[in-house]
Amino acid sequence: MEKNKLSIFLNGFIRENPILVLILGTCPTLAVSTQASNGIGMGLSVTVVLTFSNIFISALKKIIPDQVRIPCYIVVISTFVTLVQFVLQAYFPDLNKALGVYIPLIVVNCIILGRAEAFANKNSVIDSTLDGLGMGLGYTIALTLMACVRELLGNGTIFGAPVTANLFSPMTIFVLAPGGFFTFGCFVALINVIKNRKKKADKKALEMPAADAAAPAAEGGAAK
Amino acid sequence: MIKYILYALIVAAVANNYVLVRFLGICPFLGVSKKLDSAMGMSIAVIIVMVIATAVTWPIQHLLLEPRGIGYMQTTVFILVIAALVQFIETAMKKMLPSLHKALGIYLPLITTNCAVLGVCVLNIDEGYDFFRSILNSAGSGLGFMLAMWLFAGVRSKIEENDYPDAFKGIASTLIAASILSVSFLGFSGVIDNLFGMA
Image (cartoon, rainbow over all chains, first blue to last red; front, side, top):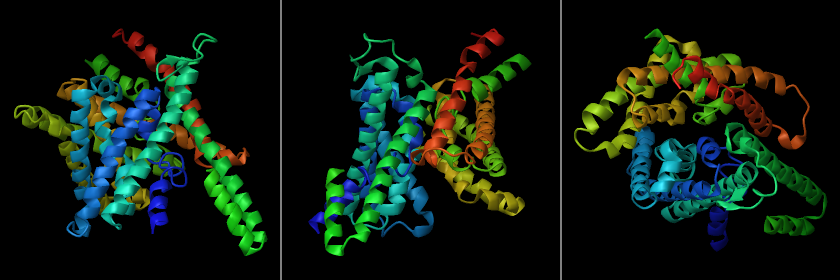
């Protein structure tokens, strides 16, 4: 039982990472990942909205009629997005300015509606909370990593601190639109390499006796 | 006047291309751009929804929400209006253009969650455009979406035939191709302002 809860939480980190594996919520990913600090801000905003909307939707799943569930989900989600917008405006005006239109656009972020439909709709409140947190943090990590790469290559800094800026002139194209697509493509390819390798390992494991097969699979999971 | 209309349309369609420069509406861009005809169908649906949604949400914001001091309800109200509109258009299309409805399949309801549509409505308000400019901006943005989809459907049919490393199969190669396509749109950003003398 405990392990099951943990696997729900960890699901979003790698195996079903919303950005890199499910390819959901691509628009803000590409637009916001120009600076590592924006990546974290956006990621945490999405995590908050995702977790709370998951909680509410799973709690209300018996009350919401099936035919009108999507509009109901959208109302729940947009309520939390408006709240996050207020918090950002009041306490983080710079971040709010940097993220701009992408904050209201969290409403139409496919990750949130997708998790509401695929998970919160069918599972208990606790499981949905864990799923929301895990997915949100997986999103934040992927977004921040991409933002670090783009900021380093495009601006020579990470979190605004100069790293290679003085060594060679940064490639500005990485903080512009094409660099976003390019970095995203490379990250997805990287995940594919890991997946393909694991598939090969699983094939080998199948040929071994069943007792031995569990060991490399467990190792593979731990290494991740 | 004609110059102004052209300027507004072209800036929205090319220099601020929603897909390749502003990163809005990437999901349908990656999802439906495999075939040219479904890409065009989707784009036409997006143009229609964008223009109608702007025509409805602009008055709502300026005549209903702002005078009552509840401008912060923008997000919730806009998304509900757009959802209702899409539902309406879907019903109309099912009745009048059943073949197109069949081709678009799952993607028509997804226009609701197409960030380009909500994005254009919110950006029109944020930029402080008047009603006329907002409509032009939406039409231009829709056309820009269509242009990107159309170009990309062509690019994609070419790359599918090629042999590339295993890791780049599927979405990764598509993203790299989109990156190269967006380089070409980057070149437009300064040109158009100078061309129309409106820098």
